[in-house]
Image (tube, rainbow, N blue to C red; front, side, top):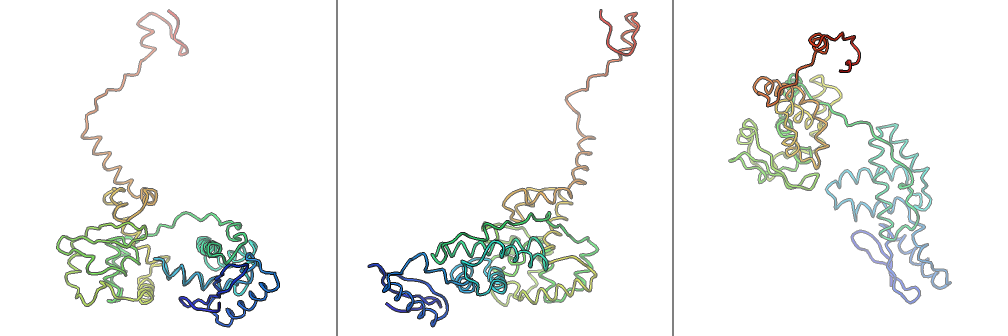
Length: 355
């Protein structure tokens, strides 16, 4: 019996009703000692009820456990941690049992006012996951308030891409530290995380193939290199494991500065992916191939670029019209007036007269 620590989280160990109990408390050693004393008193007074053990757990405490035991083991660890800490700023030391659906809605409204509906939905999803994990870990026994509060319908996916003129302006002003990254994004359509995590071992420069094993969808994929991109890699010095050893914050600052100098507004780094996809589909019209290159799990995600292929489809349909001899011949339109005259019948233009 006593207090012990495991992976920076303090636990308590005690016996109740003839059974050994272990209970996760949080990052505070003093709090763990206080909770242990309280449990011993409850057992001695016959007031020990397992369902009440977690009623004193605060959101801040469960958030820290969520980060250590769950978020840090996910591919999106950095994003999950940032959003969880933002939720702690809003919900703070409120007990889990005191957080209501109305508080969840108030959280949504604050984030939506500062950002967008989509961002509010992302935070809402994290909050719901925190409560679900708390229930799984027997640190919360109530109803998930984030499951009761409803998410809002998001606006249609934003599609912003650069024209060839804008691409030239952007590349002209890019800092030398991020210029290869921007070129790479424009010629592969890869996500920022995939690009920054790229290693030299992932590149087959001889055959011009990029191998991606860690992706958002969890499925590996291969991307052929353009000749210009392959030449750029051959000219780059291989000084470490990573191809682009540039911190995310450095990339963001220099990219934002380049956009300002190029006079490009309403554009994000992720839109370089849209730019690649848009120009690819306008030149090829091949949606299935684009789906494979982008790594979309379903054709519906790639379908947003379908309208850009209409000129390509129109051109190919014109080629078909001039080069294809159909196997059928349209039936000629029957001139009822001519038929009536040949039969010495006065045709009034209404129903065909009976024979």
